[in-house]
Length: 197
Image 1 (cartoon, one colour):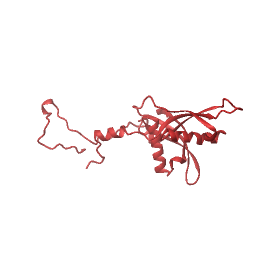
Image 2: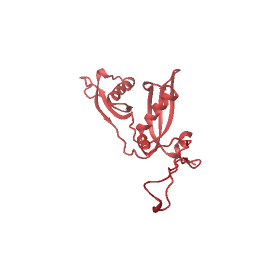
Image 3: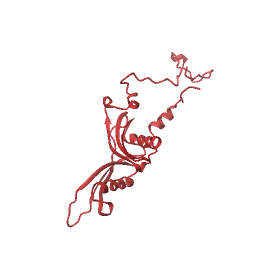
Image 4: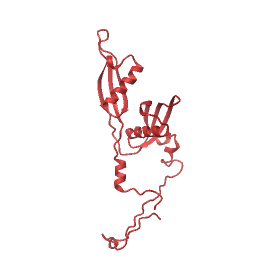
């Protein structure tokens, strides 16, 4: 058997087109108008959640801790999903987070190479759950931004950029091809050998 699992074209396409669980939402809300305050201050928040209902819930969770506004005396003006323009090229994303562990609260910075912010957030939740046993309600995203190659900090991300040494990947599936058109036939009398040599 070859040392690495052989990925078929169908498997690669399934991995690349796997839908992301977390979506980015922009939620706009304010305190309900009163006689004393007919036009209250409007607040806008960008957050990631599984659907728009949970995004609104997160909005009230954070806003009630920042301002004297809660769901009972507030109103949602708008809740829109934010879509990215380019989701075909790989980019570096830096994410600043705050999470609750079994011992206390911690701040952390993580880096991911993904094709979109939503997939980077997916990877963040999966990594924090597996490595740190952090449940999703105990994780808060403070900031997320795209990071240039020269500003990347983590070794796990640097190794894919080729900054220190050129990036090389093993050839796990060598396909024998004929030299000329006359050697290319639909049917072969001999079973092909696809093992990596």
